Image (cartoon, rainbow, N blue to C red):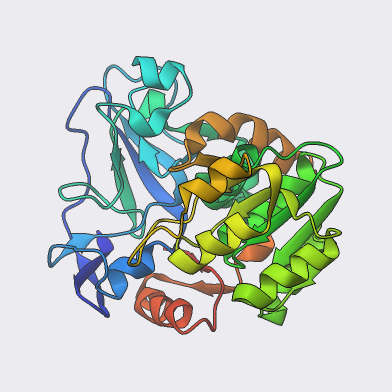
Amino acid sequence: MRATTIHAPFDMRVEEVPDPVVQEPTDVVVRVLRACICGSDLWAYRGESARQPGQRIGHEFLGVVEETGSEVRGFKAGDLVVAPFVWSDGTCEYCAEGLQTSCPRGGFWGSVGSDGGQGEAVRVPFGDGTLVKLPSGAASDDRLLTALLALSDVMGTGHHAALGAGVRPGSTVAVVGDGAVGLCGVLAARRLGAERIIALGRHTARTDIARAFGATDVVAERGEAAEAAVRELTGGQGAHGVIEAVGTEQSMRTAVNITRDGGSIGYVGVPHGSGTGLDLSVMFDRNIALRGGVAPVRAYIPELLADVLDGTIDPSPVFDLTVDLDGVPGGYKAMDERTALKVLVTP
């Protein structure tokens, strides 16, 4: 089969690789119908996250089951399924607690020795614990299929951030970051009943999506100017909840400084840069809570799936460029240059 591999910074290739096969009785082989490029993939693309030459890449996909191991009970050939960005056994204490990202036998797609989502097929370990079945009719609905793909990462991650930020009906929420996760954070905050949602972003195409997703205000400034703007919009107090979806020192500092005393920050931006931007004494003095981390999206897919299927939420607009497998290297370049928000891949 063909799959995307990374060989060096900015050196993405689509190459012939061995077809995935069932290796363990709990495995499922999935033929990929939709995949995508994540903002976190760009850290490897830019050389800021180490990768071995030829390593697979991509962690968001959905597709059709082609083969199952002898111990798989929940799936059969022909089932349409979505995969969260981490596989998990579904039987350990962490999985039972809804923290599948800490499963001792779990792992990330594209890690050394595993398949990546940006290819024609994927071997899924622990298929029963990892995959979620989708309605078969969705395969013929292009928009719905695209919306469902967002459940593999960005929609669930935005939801995780909103929960960490303590979003509740009637609250004011600020969202730092106008990438796909930040925009899904806006959508998640609206879904949880936020009355006012302030999106921080400078790119009109992205802030237009934020408004469509439920943002009531947009702040285009950065740094101290952005902090002042949010304070002005909130009567000097700041937001009850802040979603941090970038991961830099500046973005975290901004998040702290626009949080209301007694408020919460939900952080899901992958940390990178020289520091965290956190001053614990400030957070202590102002009773600011910090919750978040790697999103256990497998725990969230069932409830979010129901809302996608009935039309309550539609995250599909975050995908603004579609490529086939041959177009994946160009898709990385487009996202790196910020000419694309999130690239959909149709193998």
